[in-house]
Image 1: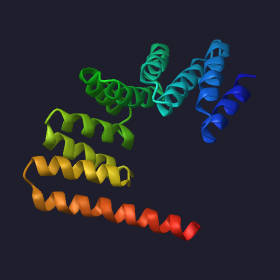
Image 2: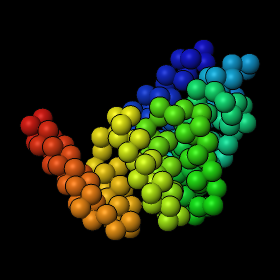
Image 3: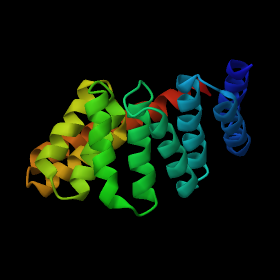
Image 4: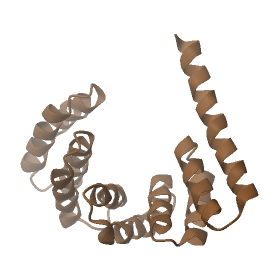
Length: 186
């Protein structure tokens, strides 16, 4: 049963057994038959597993396989945003922004897509647009130190030092809060 195999592959991801996960996701994709949704989900997750292993070329290939199946589905936005990141990690930065943009087009309520878009805009020196993208990610629920730090960097580039300091302070506060929660757990 393909769905059970998908569950096994996802379980491998949860326990950080990424090599086993890549193999299991590949089997899911091959055995999915006419179920393009499951096949696409498998390819996207296979790419994520390769990404965890820093196997960027394999990750890129997996995300492209997912997008070959359907460039307009529920998994396509995730495939595009993850592909953007993998391309950037592999040094193929020219295409990264295009895929980040496509992810936002497909799912404008996907905070990670907005974050990636902001990151790649900042890398290109388009800092005003980057700040807007980071603000969208934050409005959509992304509450990580990273998004606030990237926003601070873009604001600094724009010479908006006071706002940059506020964004950096938010990042520091979130990091301290996360550390305090970890200490409480143990």
